[in-house]
Length: 238
Image (cartoon, rainbow, N blue to C red; front, side, top):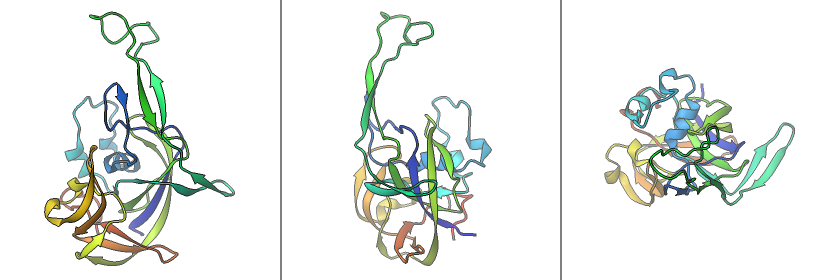
């Protein structure tokens, strides 16, 4: 069974994550890999909770995932497969939607101690058909997923990759890096640009660490960082 896949995620609905801000929120252009792993590990029942409050369960859940996903980066121009054709799609700028916090069923706000005034704000969102690229280790991801706490509908097109070799030399990473996936990351990074979000990301990274050199059917090569086996205990890491 193929263990490595290059994946293209296509949003089929407005997609958003809150990276910064409170009432007026904005996003970065990158999708963290925790959200992706919750979406693609549909067979791990214990990690899908109806309600978990505000307490995260990352420490327990990351050990249970059998599919590892790298963080995803946006594709400016992409080819979106349709039923009988391929659509060449140019990425949209993020759109901003306004909202207010009035509970329409009883026409009140969340607070009973303050005047009944709506809390108006706005959220940035990715437009439908915007696409993102990431890599999966451990097997093929599902084709249809619900991504994030808002369960936005997304389709994943997975393309198998062949392992050319493993190495621990210096290399440029072909995807954003989550530093929390690698033990002793600060000793392994040569250079990179830090992106402040959760989990934090490093872009345009050059590392001295274990990684895979992979090749697709067209002969194009990719360099994918090997994540920590201590963190991802259920992932089959060749």
